[in-house]
Length: 201
Image 1: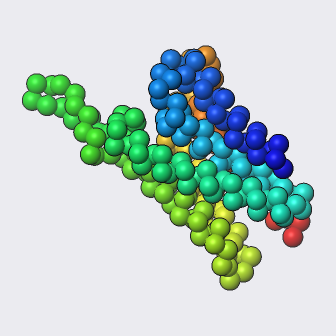
Image 2 (image 1 turned 90 degrees about the horizontal axis):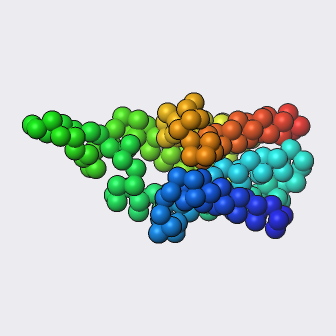
C-alpha cells in the first residue's frame, strides 16, 4: 500500500515537472503552486482509480484508504486553484474584451462560458466527493448513484478544462499529453473498475 501511495504522489509530480518545467519552459519558481497543483489534480484521479481497482479485488480497507487519499488531494487541488485563479494563471478562463482602440483586454473578474462550466463541474465533483466520504446512505443504490454523478462531474470538469487541446498533439510540449487527457483516461478506467466491482455484489 505504501508503494502505491508513493507512485500516486510522485508520478504525477515528475510528469508535470518534465512536461511543464523542462519541455514547456515554465519557470522553476512556479513549481510550489502551479506545477504541484497540476500534480495534485492527477494524483486525486489516480487514487480514485486505484481505489476502484482495490474494490474489484475485494480489498475494502485499501479502497477506503485510497479513497481518502483522493479526497485529500482533491481538497488541496481546490485550495491551490483558489489561490492561483485571481493571479491570472489561467488566462483561457477569462473573457476577452475589446476596447475602443481594438486592443484586447483580459477581464479577470469575468469567466468565459467554458470556464464557468469547468469550474461548476469541478466544484460539483468536490461536493459529491465530500458527501460520499461522509458515508450516510439510505442504501447501496443511493451510493452508486452519487458515485456515478461524481464521476460524470469529474469527466465534464476535465473535458471543459482541457478538451480543446486533446486532439492537437503537435501543440503538446515534447508530444507529452496534457494532464487533463491522462486524467480523463483514468476516469474511463475507473468507470470500468466500478462496473466490475458492482457486478460482484
